Length: 126
Image (cartoon, rainbow, N blue to C red; front, side):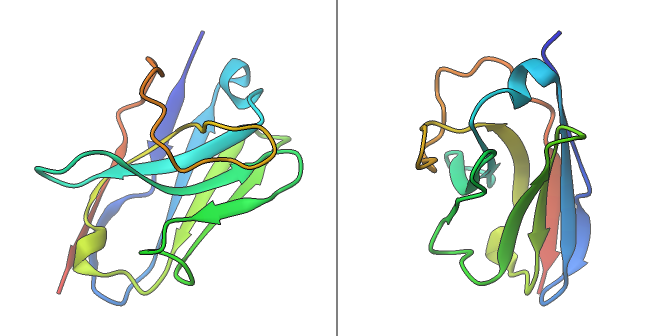
């Protein structure tokens, strides 16, 4: 069974922090690359951060560099996104999913992926 369950979102004031968690079924977590993606109202889904589950190599969108940290617990098939110094423009629905790539994990949205979870809403108020 394919499953992705995101949690940890909520309302937060600008400058605050949140930690998102993604529980992935083993058949998804078996991918080399995983990532966090977000979609703001009226905008297209975009890549936020990615991680190579074997090497721990990470990549970040310029808009979140220095503020967000992606990490994983391979033993638990769990992906995390620590978000600090949140801004109003970080507001959106956040999703985890396999990322495109092998050694380097792209931030490109995996358009062919059919098993997106419900996501978790992050709302940052200024």
